[in-house]
Length: 62
Image (cartoon, rainbow, N blue to C red):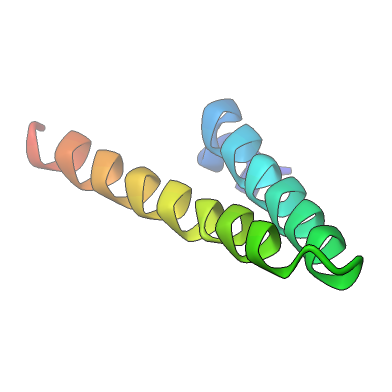
């Protein structure tokens, strides 16, 4: 429970969104729509990169 408090609600929701994006991408890829699956699958690492960037910017301003 302490880990979730430390993580924060916004970060937890963004990580949950990444999991949903990965599941949707896998579904698209495995149902035969490979190109859309790859396209949607690239959103998760992009979102994680934005999260890391915002964390670095926030820590640098303190």
